[in-house]
Image (cartoon, rainbow, N blue to C red; front, side, top):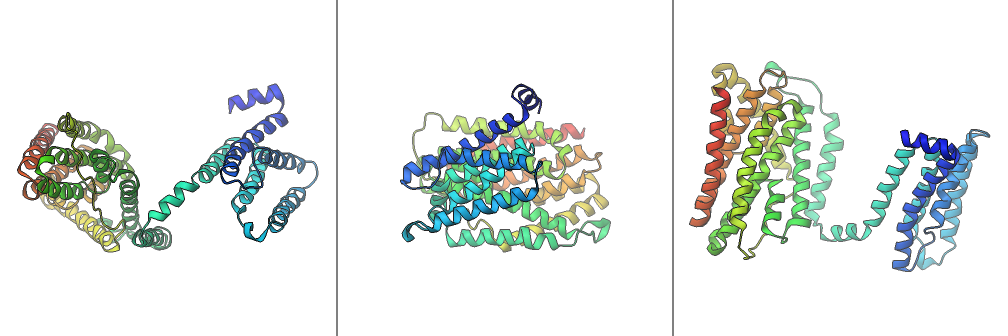
Length: 424
């Protein structure tokens, strides 16, 4: 806010508000003017929007002298003016300027925000609005490519996140208060949201855009799914084994930062213990990928079938797996100590690394178990690497199995050595 004060002292507080209002209006007006020229229609552009913003700012200032009703009546009058102007148009164009009218009303309100010194909020809101306006063509393209299954998946996600989750009891049950319905529901929503992002990134950016990009984005959802698809493809096209192997390896490289993000969400302190080992393991995978991708111009099929973006049954299964791992971690530590936790991690990693990562992050919240928790998470990733290596060996070509074996073997060896070093 320092520069606001300096400019305010130079030009005066009122003129500062006018300048900020002018800038906001120009941002929105420029986009509307461009859209108007492109589609040869529209009622407002680069001159109208700045005037409306300054009008809202000036009326906002006058309310301090007169009455707040001045602003309320002015906004109502402005909305009626836009309504009459729209209704007076030809019937075949009626409704075409609805977006511009709403943008004008929002611009008026932004001017009012500037009048009460909400400078940053007003500018940030203007940027969000202009982004929504400018992405009209992209939104239409995305919507045209969304299937009914994906639409229903999004609706189901919204229902779970906004209608079911808030009403789950935020109370603890069971031994050592392990079970909290709201907490378990939150974990399901967070993991489903990350899967949602990965799914649509693959669909609209990665698919058919190069094996590495597709594999990276696919790794955001499931590196195991990438291994399954690419291993099968390498067997169908053995001459492309190097490319598919690189895709499997780089998708697994994404697993480490993805798990680091999940761990950070539930226990930020554990990230300092995971940064070094995860960084090393990621670098090994990336180096192997770069080695395999060099001097190879073949372009294989990059399509990855990732299934439904939100399968309710799978979400429930993940919740069940998470609860099982919670109990496994608790009783393993209770009866077998540290070795029990490692056994749990090795078993959990065969199916999923997310649940054990979240469980161990929460397990180490008291601060004195961070080193143990991080090594258990690494053990789970080693187990998961073995699963993907097995998938590649049995479903892929011999060359793919060998190449992935070298890379994953290095990761597994380094991971085991790291665990042994920090335990000693």
